[in-house]
Image 1 (cartoon, helix red, strand yellow):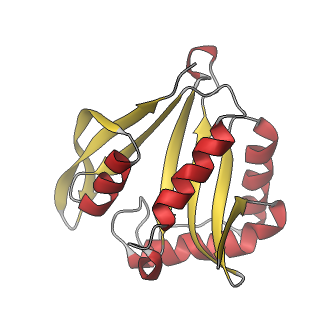
Image 2 (cartoon, rainbow, N blue to C red):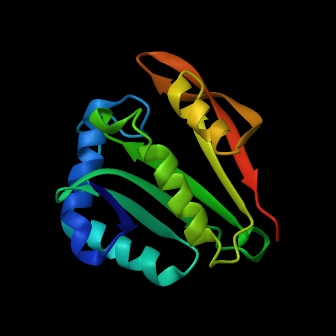
Length: 168
């Protein structure tokens, strides 16, 4: 049984392990294998900062003590963007296609209802068709294209800007 919950400071080591695993498993996350240099202490500090900020969170999916996915929401800091949450999502390969992404988004929307956020936005590499399909299923729309925004395997890749607006 997979549990989805808000991250805690003492989850720093397991969360960092998850991020490092995702760096290895997929080309669709930002960091390449070996590029992430975060320490457990730095990760713990970042989690503490996120949790005390009020408009940001990290939701983790835990399966028998192991983190298998996450959805992070980073709320805007400037007055003009405090209503927007930028999302980052990662799910280990063995748990994709089983509804975990949908569950993470549903949990994020439930969390959002307790904040002043009225919009979620994210970017996704155009070739990541499974993620694009999930985001559209969850009500996100393509709002624009970032041309040549990612360099992957020696080639430039476009990203979609996607967003979902909630009633104020």
